[in-house]
Amino acid sequence: MIVRVLRLAGKLLFFAVIGLCLALNIVPHFLDAIYYRGPVSAHFDGARFRNPDRDDELRAAPQASRSSVIWRTLTGGGGAMSPAWPDHVTVTPHALPARVAGQEMIVTWVGHATVLVQTQGLNILTDPIWSHRAGPLGFGPGRVAAPGIAFDKLPKIDLILVSHNHFDHMDLATLKKLSDRDRPLIVSSLGNDGVIEQAGVPARTLDWGGRLTVRPGVEVIVTRNHHWSTRWISDRNRALWSSFVVRLPGGNVFFAGDTGAGDLRWADEAASYGPVRLALIPIGAFRFFEGQMSSASHIGPVDAVEVVRRLGASRSIGIHWGTFRLSSEGYFTPPRLLAAAMACTGQRGRFDTVRMGEPTRIASYASPAGTPAMPRAALLRCLDTPQVRVMR
Image 1 (cartoon, helix red, strand yellow):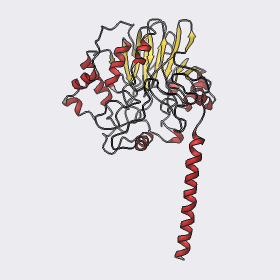
Image 2 (image 1 turned 90 degrees about the vertical axis):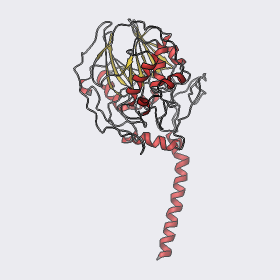
Image 3 (image 1 turned 60 degrees about the vertical axis):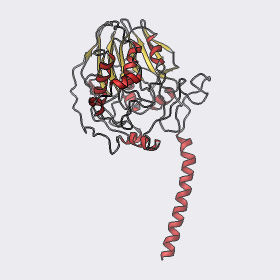
Image 4 (image 1 turned 90 degrees about the horizontal axis):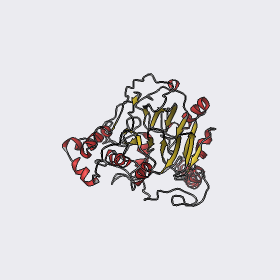
């Protein structure tokens, strides 16, 4: 009897190993996809896109493997030693106008990288996600804060900007609902239409530097940033990532998308398109081990303040924090560290955060007083205080 059980166990183990070997050879290819075909360029080798400044891999903690960091990201866990996050954050929605005419501008942070910008009679939405989880097949980190605008209270959307195809930025379920309801113009970078159209949703995609006229006097420019893309791991960098400049009378809107620092010259390039009235800049999901101030793919406040200085933005709002747990920093660390960095660089008042769901009126463009560059090392020395050290 024992011999039979051992033989059966051996056979099951044999077939399990064979199945695993087949899966390792078949599944990665199955999960790969060709989203874009086009000419080779400085950031496209004919198959995959790259960052032309430098191509960073995902940085993990010194003792951690890359797979463990990816696992924490998928499950929304910061790690056993990470500071606790709240299970729920109260969001108080406010009434919104259907339209905002002329050069008046009202901005409402919905959560994460989703922002509603209302101006010139247009309703513009960035990286919309109303789903509870940011991930595939029901997996991924869940919201700790409900969307700042309930979907049924969202005014009619005219223009949607989608920065790249990560699940917390490209939510096909939300894009489908918005497309069916409003038929908005969806603009993204090369290859992302191949993903968005899987949901039966049309999209316009452009290379970095590509321009699209929304209407006379209003133009979208797809601009460079520093990131990467994937939906299923094996399709890594098959589609391009980007930031955006929306050129408007009275000053431009810059949406950084999701980005690491790279060479930071992408901010200079965005500024070359005209004065930036409003910049939407990520400040969270930058810490994967204690003391880390940025990752290869995500800027934290230390680099965000330099982005704002290079942009010469009249007003900037910190986004990409406080909604989904994607890394190890504490819930309030991004805004608190941002305030400290702004004080060190003398830019206080130009770059802050806003409450989810609370409409914020953006003043007319005013050229900021010249702020000298502060070397990153000098900024880190300025931030080396007891108050900052306790921010985990």
